[in-house]
Length: 122
Length: 113
Image (cartoon, rainbow over all chains, first blue to last red; front, side, top):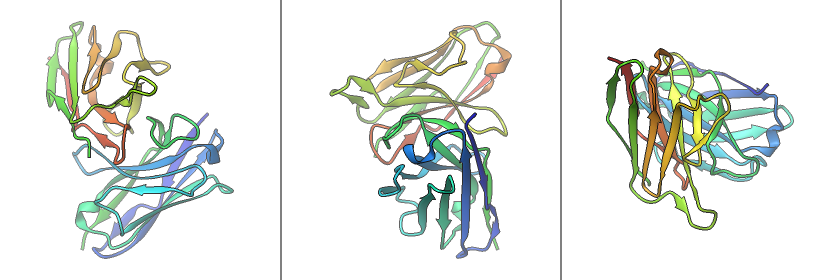
């Protein structure tokens, strides 16, 4: 059974940093691209970042480029999102999501984690 | 960026009746090389992560009832529930994965009338 478990969310002041983690099981982690998607309170879904299975290519939404860094440790089956210079508008639940097809970035997201809440407020 | 626009924003349908949700992309998401539409549909219930319903616009995920269907090509897509059940109450999102940044529609809230 595929499982994705996020952690690392919390309350942080504007300008602060957080690192989210997503530990996965039930599939060959290194074979699949992974994503972070966020959802502000009462709002829709926003793609944040993608990373290839090998970790050698990463992609970001303009809204987080230069502030967030996606990475992965395939030996630990773990995906990360380092979030720096946090702003109030980054407040959201964050999901990690697995793509449906091996070896590609551009695919639907067939498994999602439960969520971790990030609140940026003074 | 490809803009995804869903209509309507909300929809109330009687149990057993048909529900139709539309999704329009600002440019085609059809890859002419493989003839696939890079379009997915998700269902999200309160307090839960999104659940993938369809990929490639019309390929149903395992466990999705066949009264739910996805259709369309190019820039215009439709999610249809032929006979609404209480379990279908949710917010539905379309998503294009044709090009980065991946983008979602704004969501359509489906309720029972």
